[in-house]
Length: 110
Image (cartoon, rainbow, N blue to C red; front, side, top):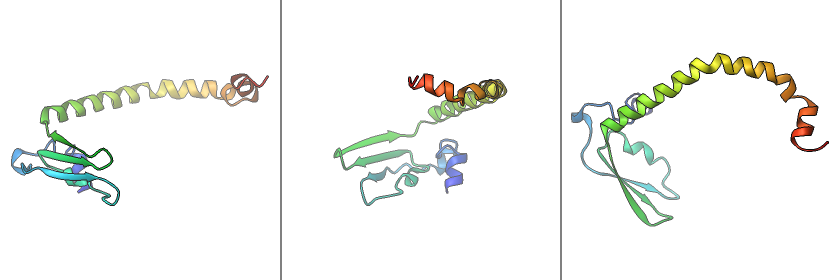
């Protein structure tokens, strides 16, 4: 179930006939662990938070799911494309950043 949830972005990429339309109640309270997985492939989720004594309602929005995926792909791509430059900068700066003199200056000990 966890793999299916991950691959479908918690059901956002499932066809409509596989998404349940009945609201699902999820408790965020001590003694109710692991409730979040019950939100998979549900159109409407009601979340009860016992500490605040309130209920939140969330509706699945497929277009938001695609936007989240698009933004995630952009961030991953940017990270991968910059990784070699970051790695080189770290290797260049590492000896200074790990030196005793740097930390004495940084912590204002000298």
